[in-house]
Image (cartoon, rainbow, N blue to C red; front, side, top):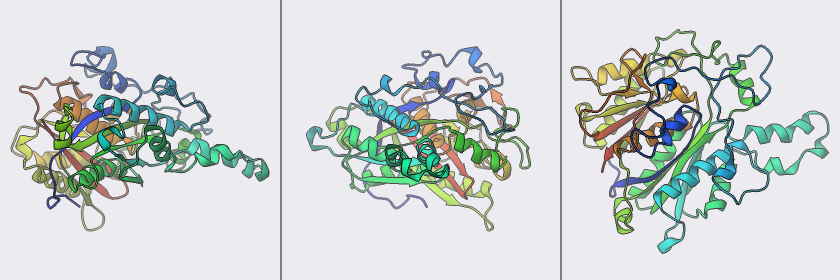
Length: 412
């Protein structure tokens, strides 16, 4: 699915908000290049291996590895003072990132008759609330199951809370799936604005680490045994995933409406594509096709790309695919600087592509340096200084459920 025939004007990103574990948090917190800690050698910017911490926030299944990334010190009160009742961690992080994105954009619901929409994505949703509710039921006491967590346990609960807190009454949709649903939420927001179905949309995703999620990864044999993974290793590697959590949101508007209110866009959402793969198409071929389709929609080619951000360095059957696809996409030309934020933030599923889009947007606005850098073999590399201001950024994505995707941003 690509957008080469989509109608409407340009779509710009006017705000981005991210909740992420260290060391990614320092990158996104940078208010200007050289600020916020992203150049610190102790954080791996010199090319050394990034070591995830051990998880201690919840009970790990017996025998399961305890490695993972987690923003243990996240406090919703740092973002929103009005929330005082029960709230699930997945919803809390969504509120924090959504508030940061709206604040950066300067857009307020209801101002000048503007109704802001919402496109939200999550893979696992509010597992903590679901676990809390079902604990009594599984123990044989369903009459004592707490009612409040039940209302917070659905995958679309965070979207309802976001809409209530920020007064979002426009175009609204929730995507629940694997990695691709995060990219799809942002892409759908861009489409809705291009087609004049909405004037502005808050789009993004959130995921939380939890005991039930850890049990799932462990039961499926997906966890790394030593807290390390190799992002672009060949298929058959025993490197598993290192789970992570977080939230990322973007504010998208039509270029005309943003200009009319005097907003300064970070970047333009110039093109996107999703291409399925399976028995008839290899993942690498699907990813290359998605990248080419997204670039074509943006009226650009591989030689125009200033930076590549890999949204899904993965293990198992998809391992090595991004490296193969990028080698073919940039065959015969110099490969642009390449970055893999997931190496520093863990496997955050639906959030990962939105992390990448937010990082790419900040890079094109000359607000932050993408990180961490990887070389053509998928190894950590030293940050690469751009020879000229970056103009086109390409986000690539692979979803184990059979989708390859790409998103292209252009400097404004």
